[in-house]
Image (cartoon, helix red, strand yellow):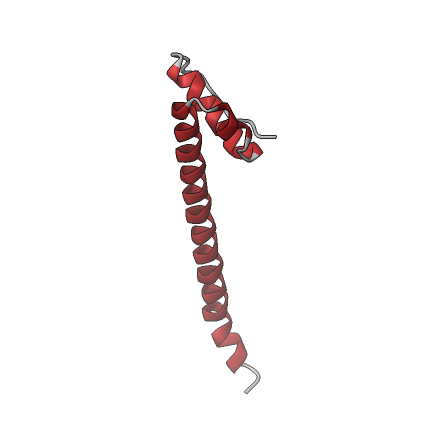
Length: 83
């Protein structure tokens, strides 16, 4: 009877790995969605030209806004390094 747990161990490990992979996938999807929302907000603020709305942005939104403005000015090698 002590061997029963041994036979189920590979299945349990596979199940744990599946759960971890699924959680990582959800995390990546959430990050991508948040990044897209920040980019959209930044682009909208840049197009508005309204200094008040630009100053009201969060730091991350401000970074995306500045990147959008620089792209509008023709710059192409823009990297967001964060904070």
